[in-house]
Image: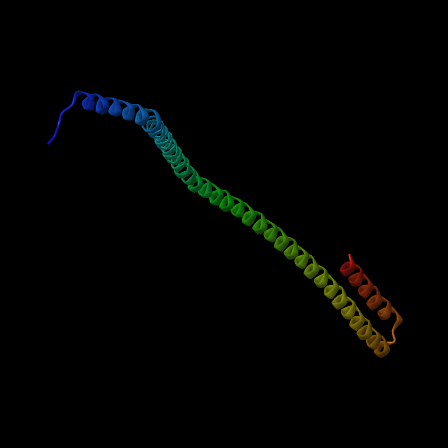
Length: 163
């Protein structure tokens, strides 16, 4: 049967106290230290994750703002390019019109010179024909007074056409 002895209970209590002290000293202390270290590491990781999340949100806001600005800047660049292209178009058109005007003016001068040249050649040709006609008339008439009058009239008309 079971005997309850005071010494037995005392040794059991002492054994339990010694076991508790050993466990507290060598098992619970390090385990508690490891658990508290683990807890602080988890808290640190959570804080870092929270900081990273807030930083990511901030970067997202900056990205969205820059994308909005990029659209505006792209529109500004396109508008500036269109304006510059319009100015360049106007300059090119103005230069082309000026060149065309100069060429037209030059062509008109050339035409006027050609007309003058043709008119002069025509007058020379007519004068030659008149001389030939006068020479034939002189051959037929052989009158010196009449020849002189025809010659004077010819010179007078030729002089007027030259002036």
